[in-house]
Length: 308
Ligand SMILES: Cc1cc2nc3c(=O)[nH]c(=O)nc-3n(C[C@H](O)[C@H](O)[C@H](O)COP(=O)(O)OP(=O)(O)OC[C@H]3O[C@@H](n4cnc5c(N)ncnc54)[C@H](O)[C@@H]3O)c2cc1C
Image (cartoon, rainbow, N blue to C red; front, side, top):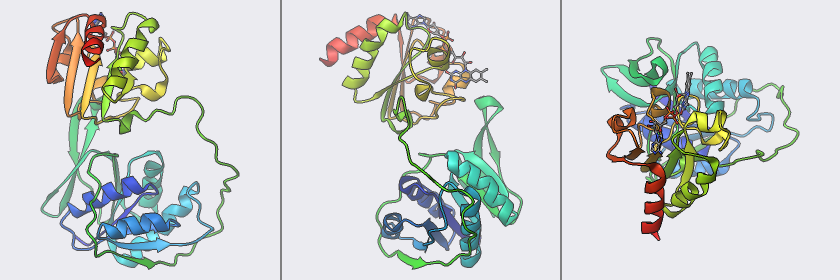
Protein backbone atom coordinates (compact mmCIF):
# COMPACT_ATOMS: atom_id res chain seq x y z
CA UNK A 1 0.00 0.00 0.00
CA UNK A 2 1.26 3.48 -0.83
CA UNK A 3 0.87 6.28 1.64
CA UNK A 4 -1.98 6.94 4.02
CA UNK A 5 -2.92 10.52 4.89
CA UNK A 6 -5.23 11.46 7.76
CA UNK A 7 -7.22 14.64 8.21
CA UNK A 8 -9.81 15.94 10.63
CA UNK A 9 -10.35 19.50 11.84
CA UNK A 10 -11.03 17.98 15.29
CA UNK A 11 -7.85 17.14 17.22
CA UNK A 12 -9.34 14.22 19.18
CA UNK A 13 -10.71 12.63 16.02
CA UNK A 14 -7.41 13.19 14.18
CA UNK A 15 -5.62 11.24 16.92
CA UNK A 16 -8.15 8.40 16.51
CA UNK A 17 -7.52 8.43 12.75
CA UNK A 18 -3.81 8.08 13.41
CA UNK A 19 -4.45 4.84 15.32
CA UNK A 20 -6.60 3.67 12.39
CA UNK A 21 -3.87 4.56 9.87
CA UNK A 22 -1.22 2.79 11.93
CA UNK A 23 -3.32 -0.39 11.80
CA UNK A 24 -3.09 -0.51 7.99
CA UNK A 25 0.51 -1.77 7.67
CA UNK A 26 1.47 1.29 5.65
CA UNK A 27 5.04 2.47 6.04
CA UNK A 28 4.11 6.00 5.02
CA UNK A 29 1.48 7.50 7.32
CA UNK A 30 1.25 11.27 7.40
CA UNK A 31 -1.20 13.85 8.67
CA UNK A 32 -2.63 16.99 7.11
CA UNK A 33 -3.48 19.88 9.42
CA UNK A 34 -4.99 23.16 8.34
CA UNK A 35 -4.29 26.38 10.22
CA UNK A 36 -3.96 24.68 13.60
CA UNK A 37 -0.50 24.67 15.23
CA UNK A 38 -1.75 23.01 18.41
CA UNK A 39 -3.18 20.06 16.50
CA UNK A 40 0.00 19.78 14.43
CA UNK A 41 2.07 19.54 17.61
CA UNK A 42 -0.29 16.98 19.19
CA UNK A 43 -0.07 14.75 16.11
CA UNK A 44 3.70 15.14 15.85
CA UNK A 45 3.96 14.13 19.52
CA UNK A 46 2.06 10.98 18.59
CA UNK A 47 4.86 10.13 16.15
CA UNK A 48 3.52 11.10 12.73
CA UNK A 49 4.89 13.37 10.05
CA UNK A 50 2.56 16.36 9.88
CA UNK A 51 2.08 18.63 6.87
CA UNK A 52 0.54 21.88 8.04
CA UNK A 53 -1.19 24.19 5.60
CA UNK A 54 -1.18 27.81 6.75
CA UNK A 55 -3.43 29.89 4.61
CA UNK A 56 -5.93 32.45 5.83
CA UNK A 57 -7.98 32.05 2.67
CA UNK A 58 -8.94 28.55 3.88
CA UNK A 59 -11.94 28.41 6.21
CA UNK A 60 -13.35 25.13 7.52
CA UNK A 61 -16.87 26.13 6.43
CA UNK A 62 -15.71 26.13 2.80
CA UNK A 63 -15.56 22.35 2.53
CA UNK A 64 -14.85 22.43 -1.20
CA UNK A 65 -11.70 24.49 -0.65
CA UNK A 66 -10.63 22.22 2.25
CA UNK A 67 -11.07 19.21 -0.06
CA UNK A 68 -8.83 20.93 -2.62
CA UNK A 69 -6.15 21.57 0.00
CA UNK A 70 -6.23 18.00 1.38
CA UNK A 71 -5.99 16.62 -2.16
CA UNK A 72 -2.91 18.72 -2.87
CA UNK A 73 -1.26 17.47 0.34
CA UNK A 74 -2.20 13.86 -0.56
CA UNK A 75 -0.58 14.33 -4.00
CA UNK A 76 2.51 15.87 -2.43
CA UNK A 77 3.05 12.97 -0.01
CA UNK A 78 2.02 10.29 -2.51
CA UNK A 79 -0.94 9.09 -0.41
CA UNK A 80 -3.43 6.89 -2.23
CA UNK A 81 -5.63 6.50 0.85
CA UNK A 82 -7.07 9.34 2.91
CA UNK A 83 -8.75 8.65 6.25
CA UNK A 84 -11.29 11.21 7.48
CA UNK A 85 -13.60 11.31 10.49
CA UNK A 86 -17.20 10.38 9.73
CA UNK A 87 -18.68 13.33 11.57
CA UNK A 88 -20.98 15.76 9.78
CA UNK A 89 -18.22 17.83 8.17
CA UNK A 90 -16.04 14.79 7.53
CA UNK A 91 -18.80 13.10 5.56
CA UNK A 92 -19.31 16.14 3.35
CA UNK A 93 -15.56 16.41 2.88
CA UNK A 94 -15.31 12.70 2.00
CA UNK A 95 -17.58 13.07 -1.03
CA UNK A 96 -15.91 16.23 -2.26
CA UNK A 97 -12.39 14.87 -1.73
CA UNK A 98 -13.21 11.57 -3.45
CA UNK A 99 -14.49 13.51 -6.44
CA UNK A 100 -11.35 15.69 -6.50
CA UNK A 101 -9.02 12.65 -6.18
CA UNK A 102 -11.06 10.46 -8.54
CA UNK A 103 -11.21 8.01 -5.62
CA UNK A 104 -13.70 5.49 -4.30
CA UNK A 105 -15.38 6.53 -1.08
CA UNK A 106 -16.89 4.84 1.99
CA UNK A 107 -18.32 6.72 4.97
CA UNK A 108 -19.67 5.63 8.39
CA UNK A 109 -17.04 2.91 8.62
CA UNK A 110 -17.08 1.09 11.97
CA UNK A 111 -14.08 -1.23 11.62
CA UNK A 112 -11.04 -1.61 9.37
CA UNK A 113 -8.89 -4.61 8.58
CA UNK A 114 -6.42 -5.69 5.93
CA UNK A 115 -6.83 -8.69 3.61
CA UNK A 116 -4.00 -8.93 1.09
CA UNK A 117 -3.89 -5.51 -0.55
CA UNK A 118 -7.51 -4.72 0.30
CA UNK A 119 -8.71 -2.51 3.12
CA UNK A 120 -11.86 -4.19 4.44
CA UNK A 121 -14.37 -1.70 5.88
CA UNK A 122 -17.32 -2.65 8.03
CA UNK A 123 -20.49 -0.56 7.82
CA UNK A 124 -24.01 -0.97 9.14
CA UNK A 125 -26.42 -2.08 6.43
CA UNK A 126 -30.16 -2.68 6.04
CA UNK A 127 -31.02 -0.03 8.61
CA UNK A 128 -28.55 -1.43 11.11
CA UNK A 129 -29.94 -4.97 10.97
CA UNK A 130 -26.64 -6.29 9.69
CA UNK A 131 -23.01 -5.36 9.19
CA UNK A 132 -21.60 -5.34 5.65
CA UNK A 133 -17.91 -5.78 4.87
CA UNK A 134 -16.95 -3.72 1.85
CA UNK A 135 -13.77 -2.58 0.10
CA UNK A 136 -12.93 0.05 -2.47
CA UNK A 137 -11.65 -1.31 -5.79
CA UNK A 138 -10.37 2.03 -7.09
CA UNK A 139 -6.66 2.78 -6.69
CA UNK A 140 -7.40 5.85 -4.62
CA UNK A 141 -9.53 5.60 -1.54
CA UNK A 142 -11.29 8.02 0.80
CA UNK A 143 -12.55 6.35 3.97
CA UNK A 144 -14.48 8.19 6.67
CA UNK A 145 -14.41 6.41 10.04
CA UNK A 146 -17.01 6.84 12.75
CA UNK A 147 -15.84 8.72 15.86
CA UNK A 148 -14.67 6.47 18.72
CA UNK A 149 -14.06 3.47 16.48
CA UNK A 150 -10.38 3.65 17.41
CA UNK A 151 -8.58 4.78 20.56
CA UNK A 152 -6.59 8.02 20.37
CA UNK A 153 -2.97 7.53 19.39
CA UNK A 154 -0.73 7.82 22.42
CA UNK A 155 2.33 10.01 22.65
CA UNK A 156 5.14 8.31 20.75
CA UNK A 157 7.57 11.12 19.91
CA UNK A 158 9.71 11.25 16.77
CA UNK A 159 7.09 13.01 14.64
CA UNK A 160 7.73 16.23 12.75
CA UNK A 161 5.89 19.24 11.38
CA UNK A 162 6.54 20.62 7.91
CA UNK A 163 4.71 23.45 6.21
CA UNK A 164 2.94 22.54 2.97
CA UNK A 165 2.05 25.21 0.45
CA UNK A 166 -1.21 24.72 -1.43
CA UNK A 167 -2.97 26.83 -3.99
CA UNK A 168 -6.42 27.94 -2.93
CA UNK A 169 -8.89 30.30 -4.44
CA UNK A 170 -10.24 33.00 -2.17
CA UNK A 171 -12.90 31.33 0.01
CA UNK A 172 -16.36 31.36 -1.49
CA UNK A 173 -17.76 31.24 2.06
CA UNK A 174 -17.23 33.92 4.68
CA UNK A 175 -17.82 33.09 8.35
CA UNK A 176 -19.50 36.16 9.83
CA UNK A 177 -20.16 34.96 13.37
CA UNK A 178 -19.85 31.94 15.67
CA UNK A 179 -22.83 31.24 17.93
CA UNK A 180 -23.09 28.53 20.56
CA UNK A 181 -25.75 25.99 19.79
CA UNK A 182 -29.02 26.86 21.48
CA UNK A 183 -30.89 24.30 23.58
CA UNK A 184 -29.59 20.99 24.90
CA UNK A 185 -25.80 20.79 24.48
CA UNK A 186 -25.39 17.28 25.90
CA UNK A 187 -22.93 15.04 24.06
CA UNK A 188 -24.20 11.51 24.67
CA UNK A 189 -21.61 10.08 22.25
CA UNK A 190 -18.85 11.21 24.60
CA UNK A 191 -20.48 9.86 27.79
CA UNK A 192 -18.86 6.87 29.52
CA UNK A 193 -22.17 6.00 31.21
CA UNK A 194 -25.64 6.32 29.69
CA UNK A 195 -28.98 5.78 31.39
CA UNK A 196 -31.48 5.56 28.54
CA UNK A 197 -35.26 5.63 28.88
CA UNK A 198 -37.87 4.30 26.52
CA UNK A 199 -41.62 4.32 26.29
CA UNK A 200 -41.80 2.07 29.34
CA UNK A 201 -41.40 5.21 31.44
CA UNK A 202 -44.82 6.13 32.81
CA UNK A 203 -44.59 9.90 32.57
CA UNK A 204 -42.32 12.89 32.32
CA UNK A 205 -42.69 13.24 36.10
CA UNK A 206 -40.56 10.10 36.45
CA UNK A 207 -37.60 11.68 34.67
CA UNK A 208 -36.01 13.36 37.73
CA UNK A 209 -35.43 9.94 39.31
CA UNK A 210 -33.75 8.76 36.09
CA UNK A 211 -31.64 11.94 36.01
CA UNK A 212 -30.67 11.30 39.62
CA UNK A 213 -29.55 7.78 38.73
CA UNK A 214 -27.53 9.02 35.75
CA UNK A 215 -25.83 11.60 37.96
CA UNK A 216 -25.01 9.04 40.63
CA UNK A 217 -23.45 6.79 37.99
CA UNK A 218 -21.51 9.74 36.53
CA UNK A 219 -23.35 9.61 33.23
CA UNK A 220 -25.95 11.25 31.02
CA UNK A 221 -29.61 10.56 30.32
CA UNK A 222 -30.40 9.35 26.80
CA UNK A 223 -33.59 7.96 25.24
CA UNK A 224 -35.25 6.01 22.47
CA UNK A 225 -36.63 8.07 19.59
CA UNK A 226 -40.32 8.20 20.54
CA UNK A 227 -39.47 9.60 23.96
CA UNK A 228 -38.02 12.67 22.22
CA UNK A 229 -39.97 12.95 18.98
CA UNK A 230 -43.46 11.77 20.04
CA UNK A 231 -43.64 12.48 23.75
CA UNK A 232 -41.17 15.38 23.67
CA UNK A 233 -39.93 14.55 27.17
CA UNK A 234 -36.27 14.92 26.21
CA UNK A 235 -34.42 16.71 23.43
CA UNK A 236 -33.59 15.01 20.15
CA UNK A 237 -29.90 15.42 21.04
CA UNK A 238 -30.42 12.48 23.42
CA UNK A 239 -31.79 9.95 20.93
CA UNK A 240 -29.78 6.75 20.53
CA UNK A 241 -30.04 4.85 17.27
CA UNK A 242 -30.27 4.98 13.52
CA UNK A 243 -31.66 8.49 13.37
CA UNK A 244 -29.94 9.53 16.59
CA UNK A 245 -26.47 9.03 17.99
CA UNK A 246 -24.26 5.94 17.84
CA UNK A 247 -22.80 5.58 21.31
CA UNK A 248 -20.04 3.45 22.79
CA UNK A 249 -20.22 3.94 26.57
CA UNK A 250 -18.58 1.72 29.15
CA UNK A 251 -22.00 1.17 30.74
CA UNK A 252 -25.51 1.53 29.29
CA UNK A 253 -28.53 1.11 31.56
CA UNK A 254 -31.58 0.72 29.31
CA UNK A 255 -34.90 1.33 31.01
CA UNK A 256 -38.20 0.28 29.39
CA UNK A 257 -36.80 0.01 25.87
CA UNK A 258 -38.03 -2.84 23.68
CA UNK A 259 -34.86 -3.26 21.59
CA UNK A 260 -35.92 -2.60 18.00
CA UNK A 261 -33.01 -2.62 15.59
CA UNK A 262 -33.26 1.11 14.86
CA UNK A 263 -32.45 1.66 18.55
CA UNK A 264 -29.94 -1.12 19.17
CA UNK A 265 -27.71 -0.09 16.25
CA UNK A 266 -26.82 2.96 18.31
CA UNK A 267 -25.84 1.15 21.51
CA UNK A 268 -24.61 -2.30 20.55
CA UNK A 269 -20.97 -1.27 20.94
CA UNK A 270 -21.45 -0.41 24.64
CA UNK A 271 -19.08 -2.40 26.84
CA UNK A 272 -21.70 -3.46 29.37
CA UNK A 273 -25.46 -3.33 28.82
CA UNK A 274 -28.02 -3.62 31.61
CA UNK A 275 -31.59 -4.03 30.33
CA UNK A 276 -34.52 -3.33 32.63
CA UNK A 277 -37.84 -4.40 31.15
CA UNK A 278 -41.08 -5.78 32.60
CA UNK A 279 -41.35 -8.19 29.67
CA UNK A 280 -39.01 -11.15 30.08
CA UNK A 281 -39.18 -11.76 26.33
CA UNK A 282 -38.23 -8.22 25.31
CA UNK A 283 -35.78 -8.27 22.38
CA UNK A 284 -33.41 -5.95 24.22
CA UNK A 285 -32.55 -8.85 26.51
CA UNK A 286 -30.80 -10.59 23.61
CA UNK A 287 -28.02 -8.01 23.62
CA UNK A 288 -27.85 -7.38 27.37
CA UNK A 289 -25.06 -8.48 29.69
CA UNK A 290 -27.41 -8.16 32.67
CA UNK A 291 -31.19 -8.57 32.48
CA UNK A 292 -33.53 -7.24 35.13
CA UNK A 293 -37.13 -8.30 34.56
CA UNK A 294 -39.02 -5.78 36.66
CA UNK A 295 -40.85 -2.48 36.66
CA UNK A 296 -38.24 0.13 35.78
CA UNK A 297 -39.65 2.65 38.27
CA UNK A 298 -39.01 0.22 41.15
CA UNK A 299 -35.51 -0.54 39.84
CA UNK A 300 -34.59 3.15 39.49
CA UNK A 301 -35.86 3.90 43.02
CA UNK A 302 -33.95 0.94 44.47
CA UNK A 303 -30.73 1.82 42.62
CA UNK A 304 -30.94 5.46 43.72
CA UNK A 305 -31.40 4.29 47.30
CA UNK A 306 -28.47 1.84 47.13
CA UNK A 307 -26.15 4.39 45.48
CA UNK A 308 -26.90 6.81 48.35
C1 LIG B 1 -36.59 4.88 9.81
C2 LIG B 1 -36.73 4.69 11.29
C3 LIG B 1 -35.73 5.19 12.10
C4 LIG B 1 -35.82 5.02 13.48
N1 LIG B 1 -34.80 5.50 14.25
C5 LIG B 1 -34.85 5.27 15.57
C6 LIG B 1 -33.78 5.68 16.41
O1 LIG B 1 -32.79 6.27 15.98
N2 LIG B 1 -33.86 5.40 17.74
C7 LIG B 1 -34.95 4.76 18.29
O2 LIG B 1 -34.96 4.56 19.52
N3 LIG B 1 -35.96 4.38 17.51
C8 LIG B 1 -35.95 4.62 16.19
N4 LIG B 1 -37.00 4.23 15.43
C9 LIG B 1 -38.21 3.70 16.11
C10 LIG B 1 -38.03 2.25 16.51
O3 LIG B 1 -38.43 1.42 15.44
C11 LIG B 1 -38.90 1.91 17.74
O4 LIG B 1 -40.23 2.28 17.46
C12 LIG B 1 -38.45 2.59 19.02
O5 LIG B 1 -37.08 2.35 19.22
C13 LIG B 1 -39.24 2.01 20.19
O6 LIG B 1 -38.95 2.76 21.32
P1 LIG B 1 -39.13 2.11 22.77
O7 LIG B 1 -38.32 0.87 22.87
O8 LIG B 1 -38.88 3.20 23.74
O9 LIG B 1 -40.70 1.82 22.83
P2 LIG B 1 -41.50 0.46 22.76
O10 LIG B 1 -41.12 -0.33 21.58
O11 LIG B 1 -42.92 0.83 22.94
O12 LIG B 1 -41.01 -0.36 24.03
C14 LIG B 1 -41.31 -0.04 25.35
C15 LIG B 1 -40.76 -1.15 26.23
O13 LIG B 1 -40.97 -0.80 27.59
C16 LIG B 1 -41.33 -1.98 28.30
N5 LIG B 1 -42.05 -1.53 29.48
C17 LIG B 1 -43.31 -1.01 29.54
N6 LIG B 1 -43.59 -0.64 30.81
C18 LIG B 1 -42.49 -0.93 31.54
C19 LIG B 1 -42.16 -0.75 32.92
N7 LIG B 1 -43.02 -0.19 33.77
N8 LIG B 1 -40.95 -1.15 33.34
C20 LIG B 1 -40.07 -1.74 32.49
N9 LIG B 1 -40.32 -1.90 31.18
C21 LIG B 1 -41.51 -1.50 30.72
C22 LIG B 1 -42.15 -2.80 27.34
O14 LIG B 1 -42.12 -4.16 27.69
C23 LIG B 1 -41.44 -2.51 26.02
O15 LIG B 1 -40.44 -3.48 25.78
C24 LIG B 1 -36.94 4.38 14.06
C25 LIG B 1 -37.94 3.87 13.22
C26 LIG B 1 -37.84 4.02 11.86
C27 LIG B 1 -38.92 3.48 10.98
